[in-house]
Amino acid sequence: MSAKVICVTNQKGGVGKTTTAVNLCYYLAKFKHKILLVDFDPQGNATSGLGIDKNDDHLKTTMTEVMLGASSMQECIIPTKYKNFDLAPATPELANAEVEITNMQRKFVRLRDAIRSVAENYDYVIIDLPPSLSILTVNGMIASDYLLLPVQTEFYALEGVAQLLESMKLVMKQANPNLKLLGVVATMYDKRTSLSAQVFAEIKKYFKDLTFRTTIPRNVRVAEAPSHGVPVGAYDKFSKGAKAYKEFAKEVEERTK
Image (tube, rainbow, N blue to C red; front, side):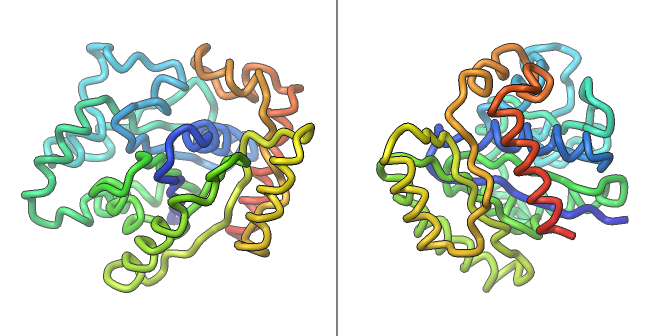
């Protein structure tokens, strides 16, 4: 077994990228897949969104140490409260590490090497990338089989997407020819507004079959869950947001068979 590696990215912040990564992992684990979530965003929101204190002294090994070659990936991984679901945590120190990585050898494949060392233990490795086109993002794309793009159904939704896809093409050409766009998932969808419907239509027109059927609604429960340090499925499994993420995870499972 070698894991399917999916990076979740959008250079725009606040589009539900981390929420999508965390909840996708939660449901794939529920479907009995072995999951590793790699928090590769210096904000560390995936780590705190799973109830792990980024300032905890026990968190001695994070993705910072892995990227700097001070620790192995295996040493970094911790179990979450959920069966089949592990986490490689991140703290804001990862932003400082980024500067150091720039001067290191094999600077663009450090994440790929780290993931390969544990890949046979998992069915899926999901990487939560930072909302920027940085050396961390490039590492994430080079390490992945698939790129998943959450897009918010609001004004300027597709702004910056073209630039991200250009970067993806460049990575494919120069370093990872096997990288594929897994698809685009519409987030923060509000069916009461015509704007959401218009933006979703625009996404479908642009990405066609690569657009996921499931849309993630704007939902209070989805917004509240991270502050309680749990995925929305564990917070309120009957909420619209939880049901949507469950359906979305099924689609991801289908597309990566």
